[in-house]
Structure formats: structure tokens, C-alpha cells
Length: 525
Image (cartoon, rainbow, N blue to C red; front, top):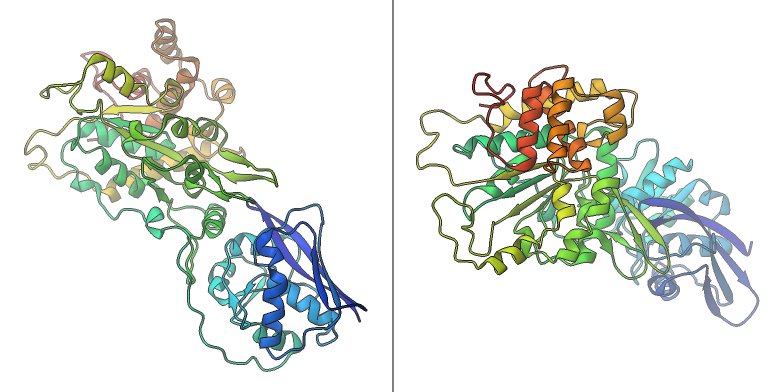
């Protein structure tokens, strides 16, 4: 038979598309033609596959060979089609049974000696193959760990083309040298959650309350204060307060990390919310995603279901920082390129940390600011108003008094995380049978219609809106925070006191009771 086909997977963003790899051998001068909108790396597959087939002890056909990748209108990028191309070609040449290629998807790059090299996005491609009904998939051995995270499909990790052919022929699998892992395409330290505990934080009652509310309801957080006051310390401990990811969330986050090159060969599901902390000099493309050809996920997608922490936020280019405005509202990012439009999930908790001015002493009770008014205004404008308006909780962090907290042990991460879990459990019950799981995710119209505040709380917010102290978006965000404070306090409805505290968390004023005679309920010790 001079025509045969195999199957592989193309990724556009995280969306997988089955690709039919057809090989036709016809009479004519020896020539290999690759069609179906291949990019440069895929066009080079002609030479890689030829060398790999010959060096694997097989005969490459000395005739006219045409390799077609369907659907032809879908741009193909990457080198992971090599194994499927080689197998379809050998089946067309008659050295493989065409029937053996049915119900088997194949991904993997071939070395010139026939080795099968690891590729990016194996988990996402395996998910796509499983959803399309494939029972088996062949992947590089170094990608087998992440591919096996997908239920309902048999994964065969291979080291070489010789092993692939032996498996398809039902022969004994030859032994091969163990593959050597390639350098990580992104630093694994980007996603490593800091191993720190909240009981290291002395004092900082308002800062601790802010990160507890942020973790419980998924609220964006803006911390500002002088250098050394503890902003980064609090932000790093926020990650430990968040509960583990669910099964579907873990698969979703792991697929993004696989495409970004963050999963190792012994990959397991990402069960902890990722903590991504790009440097303030990060480029726009590294933050939102991009690259030549088919776009790749950026830092905000790698932070999906986790935390994106930007320290020294005013030092980041304002245009780069403002690109976060759309994904903060929608929960996804679309990267448009000439070849394709890639859509990546980007539902993250944003944490910004900033000094109040270049010298770091503006607004502090003891420091003396040396910045001119012009310099101070210019510095503060580097974080735009629309970005600040999207920050649910804004706190000034001042240095704790010397020796504060030494007589009373601060609460640990485990103690506060238990309260956060209870608050999230209450939200899960409240929003059952809805698309939302956290207070921060509920749209404003639904929040006002189905989960209204009581009359005193609404009057309090309307008064602040009339005075210009809250925007229309701010009203909804304060209401969401008020619901989170009620969940932390174990209450079924936000009270006026809790709504008042939510407005203080929003505008950054000190946490004081609504009246001098009533204590502030729901406050963490």
C-alpha cells in the first residue's frame, strides 16, 4: 500500500486539534514534500525523519514522498509530529501494518539517531487525544509522567523510533539508553511556593487580616509601605493560606505548565496554587504570553488558579502593568498573532507591592520624605487608576513596633488556613449549581440581585458612593469583600460592621469599629 495515515495533535493555546498525518509514496524522482501549513521547525522534519529512519535500521523509500497534515487550513508548528510522520511513511512503504496505527495518537521529536526527544505541551495533547476517543498515545519517555496524569488513555513512553516500531509490530521492545532531560524552558523557581509560615510575622494585625480575607475570597491585594515593613513577607505567606486545587483545576493548571515547559519528567499533578513572581523588568510578552509563530503562555497564565505577585510594582513599565486589566475581569487572555489566536486561562489572584515613593518614606509616621511633589506624583501615577480600582483590598504596611508580638504567639499558617478553608466551604455551598466558587467571581448584577446586603450596609455604601469615595466597580468589590468577612466570621449575612470593615480594607484606612461602643466583629487576632 502506497498510502497510509497516522494521528497526532496540534495545540492552539491549550485547545487541542487532531491532525491526520498522511504519507503517499508515488513513482518519481526521490523527493520528500511536506504540505499542510508547516512552520520552519516542522518543515525540517523531512531531514530529521529521513536520518532517524535510516539510523534505526529501516529503509527510506527512494521515490517521491508526499506528507500531508490535515486539516490543511490549521497552522502546524513544532517538532512533535516527527514520530507520526515516520510511522505513516513506513506504513505506506509496507514495513508497518496500517491497521496498527488506528486508535494510536503519536507525539515526539526525533533525533537524527532515532531517539525520541521530549516536547512541550504533552499533557494538553494527551487530554485532547483522550477527549477525541483515542485509547492509546505514544509519547517521549520524559513526557510520560505528565501524560499519565490523564485518565482513560493508555500512555506508552518510548526512548527511540526502534521501540515505537517494535511496539506496533508486537515484537520485543529493544533496550535503549535512558534519555537525558533537556534544560527547562522556564525556571522551575517561578512556580515554587515559598516554604514560609505566618507565625514568622510579628505584629502586622491589619496586614494579616488583609491576606486572610484575600485568600478566603480570592480578592486582589495591593500592599504599600516603606522598605522593610514586611510587604513581601506577607505576600509570600499568602500562598500557604490557599487550599489545594481540585482535580479538574489541577489538570487545567498542569496543562498550562506543561505547555510552558515547567513540568519535569517525574511530573505529578500541580495540587498547590502556583505562586508566580516575575521581576518588575519583565517584558509584556513574558507576562501575557506570545512569541513568534504559535503563541505560548506567559506568567499570568502560569499563575492561573494561583497568585501573581509583582514586587516593586511602580518600577514595572506602566503599559505592561496595564495589560492585566482585561484578564483581571475576564479570567482569560487572548494572544493574537498572524497565524492564530491563542486563548489561555488567566484567573489569578493579583498581589502588588509598592513603596510609597522613590525614597520610600512618604506617608510614614517617622520617616522624612525627600521627594519633590512632581517626583511623588509621577511615581504614584505609574500604577494607573484602573488597576488600583480593580484591587479589592489596599493596605498600608508600616514597620511593626520593636519587640511587638514577643509576648503572644502569632497564629500560624495552618491555623489561619483552616479558617480560610471553612470560609471557602461556605462559599461553595452558597454558589452550588452556579459557575462560581468564590465571592470575587460573582458578577455584580448577580451579586446585587441574588445576594444583596442588608439595608444598613447598602445605605453605608450608597453614602460613600455619593461622596465619591467609591466607584461603581468599587461598590461591587466592597460587597464581595463583605461577604468574605461574613464567611470568615461564620455568619450567613454581612452586617453593617463587616461592610464598614470591607470599605476600610478597600480604601486603606485603619481598621476601626463603626462606632466607639460596638467592637469590630470578624477581626482576626
